[in-house]
Amino acid sequence: MTRPKVAFFGSPAFALPVLEAIRAEFGVVLVAAQPDKPVGRGLKLTPPPVAARATELGLPLAQPTKLRGNADFAATLRESGADVAVTCAYGKILPAALLAVPRYGFLNTHTSLLPRLRGAAPIQWALIGGETVTGTTIMQTNPGMDTGPVLLQEELPVAPEWTSLELSEALSTQAASLIVSALSQLGTLTPRPQDESLATHAPMLVKEDGFVRWRDPALAVVNRFRGVAAWPQTTAFLGGARLKLGGLGAAGGEGQPGEVLAVDDQGVTVACGVGAVRINTVQPEARRAQPAGAWASAAGVGPGTRFDLWEPPRP
Picture 1: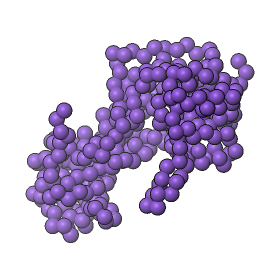
Picture 2: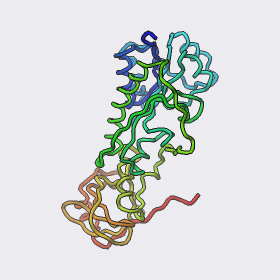
Picture 3: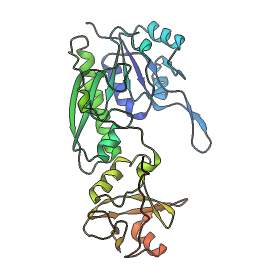
Picture 4: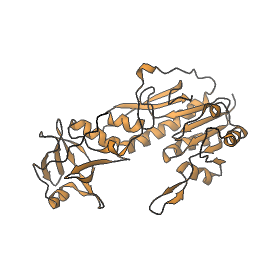
C-alpha cells in the first residue's frame, strides 16, 4: 500500500519517541492524548507531554474525556482520514466501535513479550520479577486487555543495574523503531494469536508495592527497588516512621530480616530473608535525602537496630 496516514494515541513522555518516529516516516494526521490535569503544588492545569508536543508541532490534537459513546470524537478520527491508529501508553480503554474506524484498525506498542505481562505496568513488574529479558510487542488491538494478535515482537536484554527509568528509556527507543517497521509492512504482516496459557499480568502499581519486604531474599528486595524507582519508590519503616530508601544493592551478611548489620561511610547494611542489602541514601519524611551512614549516626541507628517488618495483607 502507499504510505499510511496515521493517527497517534499517547500521553506520557515515554510515548514521544514513538510519535516522533511515526511523524518522520509517515506523518501524523491526528494526535489524541489524555485531558490536561492539575500538576504541582499550585495545581496548574498542564497538558500531558504528547499533547504539548503536538501543539508545538501544529498537529491536529484531540483530548477527549471519554471514548465510549463519544460520537464526536469518532467522527473526528474518521474525518482525519487515518488508515491506521497507533497507541502508545495512551491510558484509556478503546471501545470496539472506535477500533473499527480506521481501515487497518489500531496497533498498540506494548512493552513486554506478550502474552507475558499484560496490563498497565509491564516495565515495573518485569524488574520486580527479576526478568533478564523483556521486549516490545506490536499487536493488533482488540477490546480485551492486551489480548490482540501479535504482529511483530523484539526482545531486549535487561542490564542488571537498570531501574524502571533506564528500562523505560530503552523500551521507548525500541518501540519507536519497531512501530515504523510494522507500519512499513501494514497489510502484509500475519497476525499471530496469543497463547492464553502463557499469559501473566502486570497491574498498575500502588504505593504499597514500594514497601520493603525484609523477609524476602536480598535479590528480590533489590529487584523491587529497581522496579519502583520511578514511582512509588522504595519505602521502609523504622519505629513507625516512613523512610524513602535509595541506591539499594546486594551486600554480604546474614541476620534477622530487617536487622541492621553495619553502618559505615558506604551506607547501611540490612539483613533480608536471605542475604543482605546495602542502602546508600535515606530520606525521612519532609526532609531531603542524605547519605545513609550520616542519617544512621544522627538517628542513633546501629548494628542490631531492626526495621519494621511489613507484609502485604492476605487476600
